[in-house]
Length: 268
Length: 198
Image 1 (cartoon, each protein chain N blue to C red):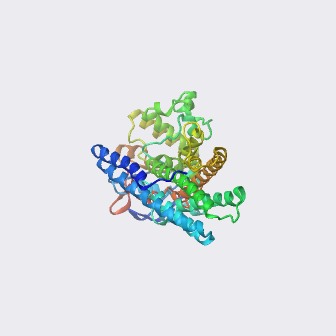
Image 2 (spheres, helix red, strand yellow; image 1 turned 60 degrees about the vertical axis):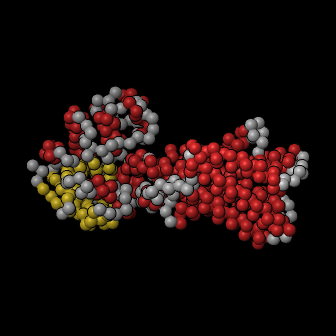
Image 3 (cartoon, each protein chain N blue to C red; image 1 turned 120 degrees about the horizontal axis):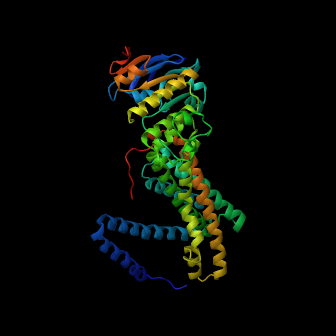
């Protein structure tokens, strides 16, 4: 594999710098966000590279578990930050984090122990990248779905309550929104699977091929990953919808918008 | 048959009154006095405390869905969630459509194309299809022309006369109070009290 030097990377960074400079004229705030995100990518990836280096050297279940939980904690914060109207209190963080834990961790365990079946199953070289990809994509699905769900509940509160007034259950009153929300959680992975190989070459497969792996082997891994991501995003979205609906309605099936932040806020 | 005692919620406290079979009671009061809040609390749409019972049965002993079918709230503006009228009716054989001047094909009509009068009359029919024991009407004729107003008033009276349902009717119109009310309740900053409807 051809090694990249710092000079190679700074050439790439020049591109982001040029984009930031140009976008100053259109939307100055965007340029700042772009630079911060680029800086975060560089720092976070460098750090994880160092962490993985140490982790690969001594394959220890405790360390793998700790890193996994850290990744989950950050993903939970990320889901919360992307909500325009998030749930108040612990639920704002909890719904996303618990849903991701349920889907991503279960599916990662299943893939490591049953499908790939390496020994030990928690071998960090497999466990961490796999969980990372699952979490990243599940996070996208869940945050899109939750954002849509809380926003729709807020905007369509009169329709929801009109149905409650007619004696409909919260499941009936929310059925139309639930379909839209489920769709928005699944559309990214459905689009990715539909376009894979024809329009786009998925990142992981491309990485393996760049690293010198035989294309057919890389493809098999990519197909597996796509299926796992579909499961993770789909079941994660279902779980998130389930918890969110339970929180949005109380035991007397009242729509409780007071459990959402009334001031729309979004960090980006 | 419908008893409310010491009902309190955000914006209201200690409301007590009762309605008898077939009784039609108007509720008036200045804007912001809490008439809509009261109706929402009675339909159990917002958290509230106090005892509310129908035919001696306390509402917390029955599922919220059953309660709202029997104690039905009709707001001033109706909301629709599907494209055609029929999708909003569980039982499409409601016999009252012709009596209200609707063609038999009304169930296939698009909601988008209904006039405000048609919307409100159909919204009332949608509520009546559940055979409620208590009707909570929140300015049901506020946005209607005189023909539609008398149509809605007649429909409510007909329903009450054969079902014995009670009705609490929020209105700002003194004329409407004189036309429809058996009793008049007024909600203001003094609380809830009774006045003569005449």
